[in-house]
Image 1 (spheres, rainbow, N blue to C red):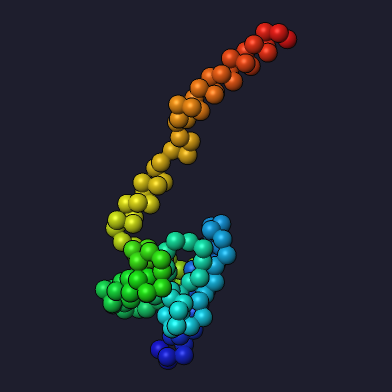
Image 2 (cartoon, rainbow, N blue to C red):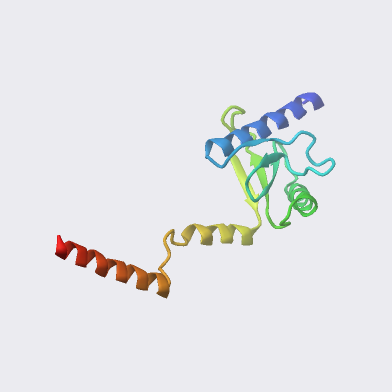
Length: 145
């Protein structure tokens, strides 16, 4: 494959990844022009807590790619553990590719824990007292009606 064609293939996958972030309702996302050079690191600029490095290769050097993502996160991200390597499966179509994310295992566990936390927490003692008092006042009002 010609270098210019390979470069365009990478850009196309990065654009697809950015579009997927927007479609999931995670805010605006775009390809980072000149990613890796200068202050801006990562291939996708988005309002998510992970630095994203996208790879669209037939033969991927996985450890080199992981090291690149980790190094980019260390240099350009507030949290060096929050990196993600997005890999396109080469056997899938370019219009609707199968893509996979590789992240640090501990960050994965944190995401699972955050997802399993209840959306409504038990009220604290003070709030519980106020709610009980409100319930009593409502019952008194109902009796008077």
